[in-house]
Image (cartoon, rainbow, N blue to C red):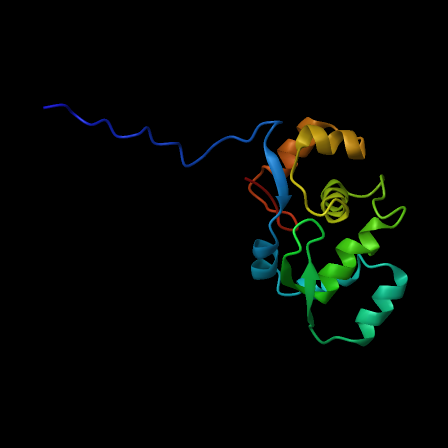
Length: 146
């Protein structure tokens, strides 16, 4: 009779490293920030900020993935923010707070995962400082590692 070995258990806590990937966990943001809609209005360009300040209704729109043709429902504010406002020149101020600058970076790159080394190169900040800030116990604006 042979004994079956159980697979090794991974530690429930893994220490993030410079290569650890980060992104905005929008589900976390929507669940933990009751005012996320109002908060994100501040990231809009002037034209769209005025529109959303006057139109406070929450609208869902069809969003089409240009690569796959897949149609999904998305929040109108999020769609405009990520596909227009976040693409504007000077959307990412290099003298802003670290967490705000990283949040804006993820908005502008379509929330594509990046590690702290990549983030550091893009915003001219220390990868170690980025790692320590984003992997600490506090979650800033839904920015999490996976």
